[in-house]
Length: 73
Image (cartoon, rainbow, N blue to C red; front, side):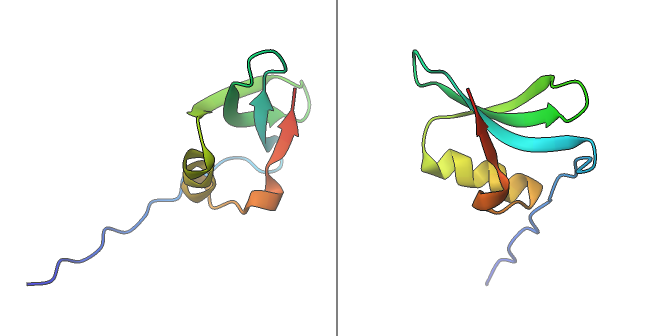
């Protein structure tokens, strides 16, 4: 009668080498969540952020809290 909730899969990333960030465009305001390589500075985009719910989904996907995600322009 009751359905079990599907276990949420948390994706892993190399926290030693990568830093989670939201890249925001100064001109258009478009926001993209992803990771920056600490050594090279290269940004790898993961998903477009159109609102708070999508930002929280990004955090849930990788097991992050809001304070762990930086901002870059």
